[in-house]
Image (cartoon, rainbow, N blue to C red; front, side):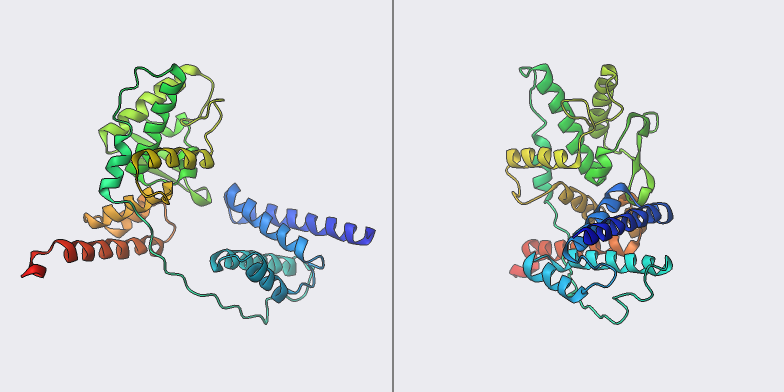
Length: 306
């Protein structure tokens, strides 16, 4: 028992060293590093002999016991594969358990889910209301929520990116915001909507006047608003607006991209606005745009009725 405990501590140390290694060499975000760490820790709990593992049994565990989707299993397997490549370079092992293992996954080609323009209008209309009767706290909360939802609609940024916006990231003279994206990549976004910019400006002024935070979006304790809290805020207003109950804030990102392409924006510009590393990721939105055009033609083309 003591031997297993010592071996487990040794493996945990190796995992910690690996995470530190990829943090430096691959410049990954903290969220990605945390996901990799949890994947490796989960595997270690399943397979005590991590230096000579049974990958097939682990695959069966992920599929049959945990009933994970192929996308989740694929990510975990890629994490493990990279980890064992690292162990070889560190001379901890001589061969990888993946060397003669062929794993096939089904290719999922799900189209991004979007909201209709009508649904987005209904969502934004939630903020066209009189708030004079509300308490000061409720007013501040409403102003924050209005700026947050409008920003997601107007720019298509990720909720984690919205959560991370600091005062110093906002360039008021240029109406631009510096966004800290995936893989520590940065990009500037321009706020083209006057209403969106007005809402952000009002919130920024209020937040700065309190002098208790450096973040644009905060919770009741003036701490950075988490992505999970943003999801709950969206859920609240989606319910109030009576729009797609299954929708998430990420639908706004998909809707933003799809409508840009539908209205004639070029693929490369949309890629840069979304902060995609590869244009192939952006390309899926062209299919959504094409599908929507087909639906419009089927429904409204007068020739169909002649």
